[in-house]
Image (tube, rainbow, N blue to C red; front, side, top):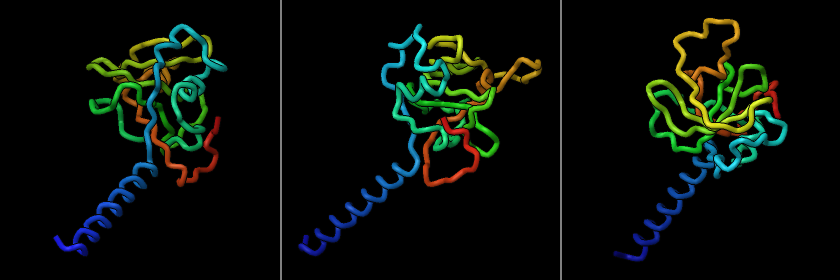
Length: 163
């Protein structure tokens, strides 16, 4: 192969690699490191997001965006951060929103590690709800509403509820 062809091929590989790396950095997911070691403990202030930020490299919630829907998506690796989101795809710290560490799913729901005020880190099943009929139900208890957390800081959103 002539030297110019080798050089051209090498440049193409470099350009492609750079392009793929840029895409990966533009929107990334987050995975937990050993969240099970915190079972039974209250992490930071007891809020779900503080647990997530302790066991992952997840940024402030202002940079969180709704990624792939969890239900039926069996390609999500265990340890991935999932959450419920507003209609515009942002995460806000409003009652009913929740973040957790995905473990697996069954026909009944999503297995996660999570915490909230008054409940230390634990493993639980968040069921897929047919409806949220009673007034006490919230979207944080409906597995249908969880999505993978992705980060794309290039997207600006007003009133993001940053934590």
